[in-house]
Image (cartoon, rainbow, N blue to C red; front, side):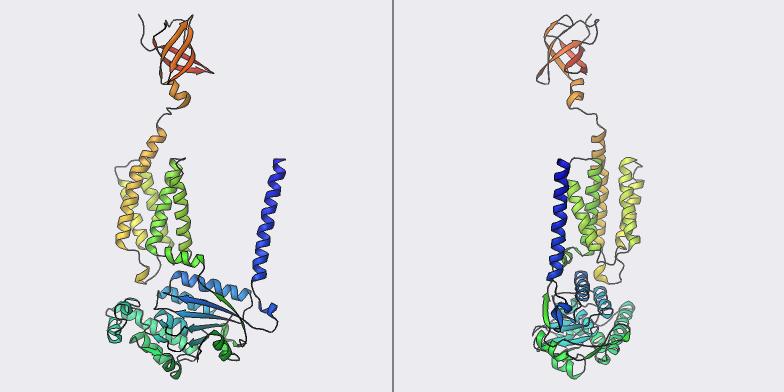
Length: 462
């Protein structure tokens, strides 16, 4: 009967899950279901360009492709962001079978730094009235504008490359945005100036200089104005846009994106991963505590989720795991610190190369590396050692506790009687006929036979 009930419950759960999936698919608009009416997906993005942003855009493009949408509009306002995340977004746009229009909106917004690259890498580049683009220098992308937002001359000076490495990055960025401009026949000279000299343009100036394709007051106006235009798609194929009167489906950052925005920081990822390892290892060697294991599992899953969108160097990750393993080994086979020191060195090296990117914003803070290394070394050296000692300690509860206890004889006759031990009264018998026991004596429990204790005198009688 229990098996039948369990089977029915499982079957009901499967049906509910299937119903939910079907309902989700039915609620997702598709171009074929709209007849001749086009379908437009609109993604509203605000803030810095981060790995979570790249993940959101990638998933939105996949959803638009599955729904056979006619266009994806990225409604963008950003001060800039991470260069690697920006490149990932542009790569996804370039290989997307669905045309993408990046639209700087609403009025009063800007698409600076990384936003300008994304605008130039889209099939359609559009701006709302009273918006601006530019200042696309990769060095100090965010710092220059945070410090000198109201002083263009100071911002330009802060963005000038000072070292050979910075000049290489600027030259690479200039070539990158110029190639995007050539692909879509946009103004490559201005784009290079935006990289090298941090220049910016308003919407009208950008249209006059052929940096963008259209100025639109809102998304509907944009879709109407670009209808019928031909854009270059994957493999240099040309597609004619069909967007006039399109059904608009709007999206925004979901819970996954908001969570990734919080945790997809290399420093936080390293800390979460280490907390996860420490918690799980401690729970393995001291089961039953629960809190370390639960905390460790949650932190481990969160770190793996964040690693899914970060450019992880797996050699660095392997060195981190090796270092933690050596630290654990120190608790099992004390080597006067050799394993622990080796583990600390391996961990620090792995943490320093954990992120596979030249972008300084992706680097793990050296102070974080040092602090986490010392913390892990201390936790494994102290807590794990204490846990192992506690595990090896003989049991002192239940029958084992009785075997190590001393009892008081309450009543005794003919080799058996009653004794009080650990506050309880038990029946007892002598361990052998040679032991002489009397009422009031103290006896030692040597064994347990069912519900009767086997005892002998605590002090030998002469």
